[in-house]
Length: 57
Image (cartoon, rainbow, N blue to C red; front, top):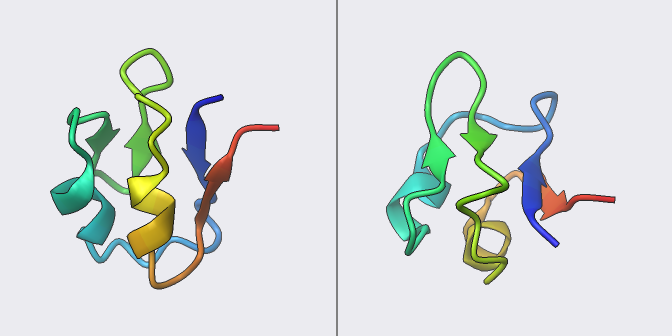
């Protein structure tokens, strides 16, 4: 299951982008995880200081 960033919680710190081993996260006004590129490793969620990343429901 791919991960998703909650735009209401994301503080755009960039930590997740630096940690994503497959480059599935893109920055912008709202950070986004490309579900087709996500390897479902959970590294982004583990390092997110705002706890804004979780598996898609």
